[in-house]
Structure formats: C-alpha cells, structure tokens
Image (cartoon, rainbow, N blue to C red):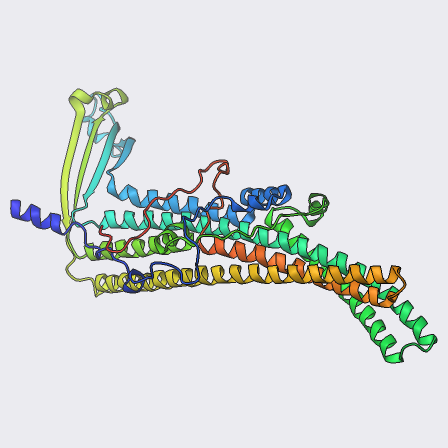
Length: 496
C-alpha cells in the first residue's frame, strides 16, 4: 500500500516541467542603444509635461475608455470561469425532496363488491389511499489522484491572469493613444497658426512683388512663384483643419464623449512642457516584469502547460465517492421523524478508460500542440519587446538630437529676421528681404513644432516599450479592483 501511495503521488502532476524557451533564456543582459544607467520607474510620467489638460484627459481615458471597459468585462468572465474550474476540486452537495399521493380502486371492486365478501355482509373498502414523503441530501466527490481537476483549474487561473495583463495592455494602449493624439492636436494647432501667419505674409509679399513687377524691378517669374506659394499654402489650410477635427473626434472617443464636448475641454491654450532627460532602459528581467503583453504570453504558456497535464490524467482511472443521507415517512410528520426513519446510502465507483477510439490520445496531442504554439508565441513576444525597447531608445535619442539642431536653426532664423528688420528700418535693406526672412522663420518654427511632437511621441514609445504601469495611483473602477501581479516574472531556470 505504501508503494502504491508513493506511485500515485508521483503521478499527481502530469504537466510538463515549467521552463523558459531556449531563445528567451539567452536574451542579452542590456540594450545596446542605451547609454544611461539606473532603475526604470514606470510611474505616471506624463505628469512631467506639466499640463493639467493632458493629465485630466489621461485620467478620464483610463476611467471611461470603452476598450478598457470591454477588457474589464473579459477579466470578470475569466475570473468566473476559473471559479467554475475550481468547483471540480470540491464535493458536490444536492438536496432532494419527494412527495407522492395515490388514490386507486381495489382490484375487483367493480365486480359486485367481491372485495367485501359474501352477500348481506358488510362491504369492505373499495379504494386504497396512500401518501409518502422523503427528504435527503446527495454528496459526491471525485478523488483527483492524477491531477486532472487541479490542472484544469491551474489552466483556468492562468487564463484569468492573462486576462488581467491584457487589461493592463489595453490601459497602456488607451493612455498612449490619448497622449499621442493630444500632441497631434497641439502640433496641428501650431501648424495652423503658422499657416495663417504665412498666408498673410505671402499676401503682403505678393503685393510687394506685384508692385516691383509694375516698376520693372523684377521679372514675372518671381511674381508667379510668390503667387503659387500663396495658393499652395492656402490649399494646405483645409487639410490641416480637417486633421484637427479628426484628432478631436478620436480624442472624444478615447474619453467616451461626443466630439462637441472636446471644444470646451480643449478651448484653453495647450502648452505642454517638453521633457528631454534620459530614460534609463532597465534590464530584460525588468522588461519581462513590466510589459503586460509579455506577462500575458507567459500566463498563456502556463495555461497550455497545465492543460497538457489535465489531458494526460484522462488516461488514468477516476474514483468517485458518494453519500445520500435522508429520511422518509408515510406522512409529513413521519418524514421529519429522523430518529426512526433515517436512511443512508454510501457508494464508491471506479471508472477506467479502456477503449475510446483514440480520443484521449488525440486530446493530448492537441493540448501539446497548443503548448508548443504558446511557447513560440511567448518567445516571439519577448523578442518583439526587446526589439521595440531598443528601437524606442534609439529613436528617442535621435529625436532629441534633431530637436536640438532645429532649435539652433531657429536661433539663426530669428537672428536673420531681426537683422533684416533693422536693415529695413535703417534704410539700407528692402522690405521684401525682411518678408523672406520672416517666412523662413515661420518655416523653422513649424519644423520645431513637429520636432517637439516627435520628441514627446518617441518618449512615449520608450515608456510603452518598457511597459509602464499607467494605472498606478488611480482609484479602482467601481465594482472591481485594479489588476495585481499574480505571478512573478519568469526567470531563467524557474521550476514549478
């Protein structure tokens, strides 16, 4: 018996051993494009832009976004399915009650009162009336010797964990889209302002050129070129305004509002402060712990691993214990006379598969194939995360350098415009040269606005690639708690 118990204990978990895919176990120790050191802290970093409008929009997006609401419902569904799977580990108890009443004639009572004996005597009863009542409980329990129910529950729980991380991914996407759209609005507004100023400038430049042409001081080609520039600039304005309206509509959808509501929310000047400090890259171990898509892929790999064990356990016998205590009686009072009318049935059953037409083997093969798929998906997710983080760090650094170059160019353009203004006031320069210098200044300002947007979005890309916790410090939604980490980040050589 001791040998049998030891053997059964050894077979209790038939799932494959937990292990990192070989490719992910060999991930480099750091990012080659990162030149900074330090710990990455995924707080609500967008507050560094020092823009209350942006802070309020991100807060509303995390609270009211419809994609997040849908993901929250999927979390609740997965949690309920995990509780369903856990119920197989517990006994099942049912209550039963039965009542019956009958009123039937005696056999032969319809043939001259045969039931009552000879003629002239007292006639006996011609009908039989009977009633009975019973109450009982039924309990059954399957002994999970080989871990089928435990593995099914582990798989469902891992699916619930994956749903929690998917919820975080949707939060991350909603916040990132809100920030990206906000800077698109800021940049587009600035581009429209500069376009309007340029249109006015070109109109004045065209007037000056036309006057010079009439006086014979310039050729028709110059006048034609200025007029073409004016028309092209005017033609770009409707496109910019349409892009701004589209951005307002997308922002309204992110915060679950109609576009009309955004007019008042975005009416004030939008002046986010650009942030240029280096963002430490962290380590791949931190990356695996912070990125919700990586954590979700690992949880799904664990779910597939547990299901392999559950399907393997179906090869072995199952033992079920059942008990049915109760009471019965011929009337209501008798049914509750438990001391005299109790009844008890105990049973044990063993069911072992002998021939299933290959169903069990096919289920095992299918579960193993799903496990291999999830292993490949996890490795791909890790490699993608590493590539995205490395590329985002490099992109952020390049955009910072580009912004610095354009900022220096802006200083030169401003100096040129000021110089031409002074020359014109001093009578040694012409007004057309001043207008051309001013137009060049507007062009550099437009380029600087786009460069600032690129810096902000590339910084967003770094945080998104490193899996920032966008919900930190926010109150949980009504009726549910914020997702919490239920499993540690997978480490090399981790054992179950």
